[in-house]
Length: 223
Image 1 (tube, rainbow, N blue to C red):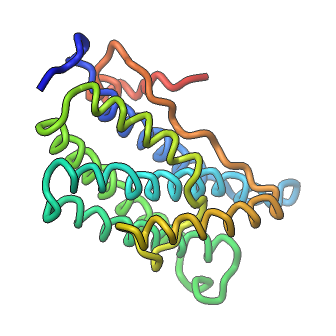
Image 2: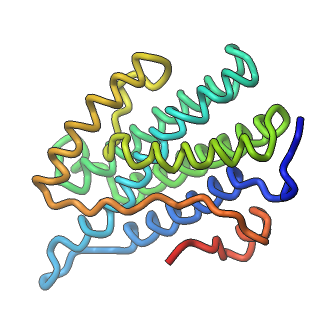
């Protein structure tokens, strides 16, 4: 396996770490935001970027990293299958958050603390599983190949659904077709609602490793 000269820098692992740092910050911002008399829709403005960016990232990982793991590590790779299941759990939590936010009768009696605890737990589980999946790929791919996967992940995040869809297929051809249809529906409603969709984290080489950046809470995000 021929690695590039910058073999110490794993762009894919850095990108996953940076993305989850951003998602966690958006989650905390949304959790802390409450509507006021002057800003009755403040909670929507804070929660929508978190919901959209988290939904897109999960869909993009299923579209790019899971197939890559199955290709490089075997069709029966356990963590690839585990990630599809974890995706559904996180998306169910996001659906509950959205339902509570918009006053659905199905979530009106559930306390906010319970909603946010579930979201935080499933987001953390997703992050940990993604990083283990990337570690698995590190043993079977070159640094350049993982850099290409990071770029593909970035491009995929810009063309996958912006809302959680836990009950649609996640893997294989059915998953690809389901994402395509859901994207068109989500784009229609995003436009109709004037919803703000943030840009995904762009992969780039960093002089600091992912662990250093994470511990310093300094993910070197583009401005």
